Image: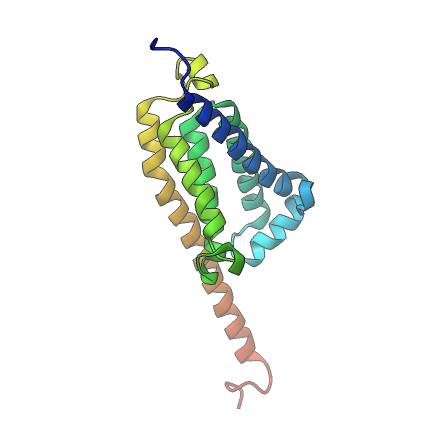
Length: 190
């Protein structure tokens, strides 16, 4: 077979990229525009504040951009390492909200977010295939070192964001406890 011939692997990667990219773009459109039953930046930002991703609006915009932009880039197969890492990181962070519910999605667990993170990470590592803009542009933004960088940076970045969330939640709990102890009739007032 000729070196530049399209193989079934390329067709499979195209189908995966198109489907996964569409799912990620839909999630981003929910956050950014309120499409598909989403809550837009305001509603998503308020939810993010509530669950510890503060400031909520800023984090909502970052998540929306990662999902919309990453999904679009994956669908067309451009900058695949960065796009896959953006999708994987966003889904790892999203899973932190669900992890207390266990693994299975039917119980509210992390199953769905974890599968999306794995698909994004796998695409970042494997590349987009020949039926892509990366291939058409001679891999200008899809170099082997970019794949390594994407793979090695996504988990530490997600851990950093999740740890910020956990610190914010802990600070809120401490503030709530302090306010409760300052109320008349509380145990500290007796």
